[in-house]
Amino acid sequence: MTGYLLVFALAVALPCRGNENGNSDSSDSVHTGLECYSCVKVSPPVLCAKSADREHPPCKVPFGKSNRMRCESEEDNCIAITYVHVGTVLNLFGCDTCESIHDKVPTAKCVECKQNLCNTEAPTSCDIV
Image (cartoon, rainbow, N blue to C red):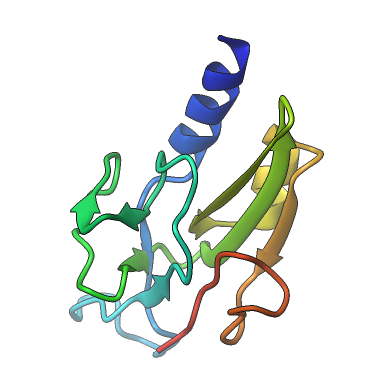
């Protein structure tokens, strides 16, 4: 039961928020955002994850067919997270900062995605488009 509380706490910590795509002086423009995607089935699907062609809450922005999400907050990055809880490896991804994640879950491996990380640094990945 405690395991689900920790996963839920992490899920609450990583809402689908977003980031302007680095354009200066665009405070009133439409957010193009930082677009992230998951390369693999995310387990458990408590964050922005898609498996079996179903979207899972608490994602506020629906995925396209390529398991994408958009970050809109300027402070957030696409991050891929891996940690072990009660013998189970959890692979998650979302919009936040690794510093914020390590404050909540110090044992988590967190990678701020600056490039396509599929099959390299993390089992979930992000790509900036």
